[in-house]
Length: 92
Image (cartoon, rainbow, N blue to C red; front, side, top):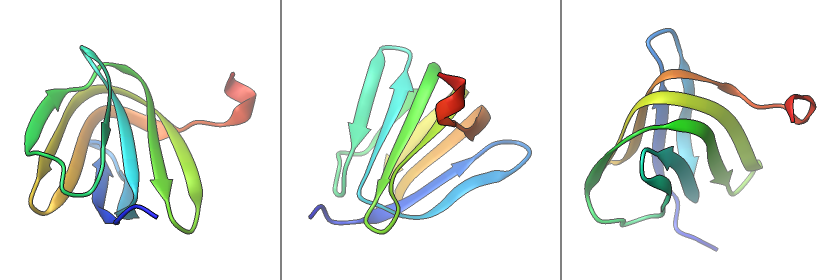
């Protein structure tokens, strides 16, 4: 089992996620990037695509995300998105 880290996903209107995650995959302007516990500190610009969050208790959660940035540092991962909403199976 992966070591959990703190993940926060926010937009100008709401806090979409604030809790522990085992992994997050973010679509950046150069492609998908996955972040795990103790990832090297980084910043990246978010593109348009899916944001995937894996938690120990809820499994995989998926959100549509567009614009903004992701920041990884000693406190965890922060995703600040222009737009983000939970993705449903019916939208595929």
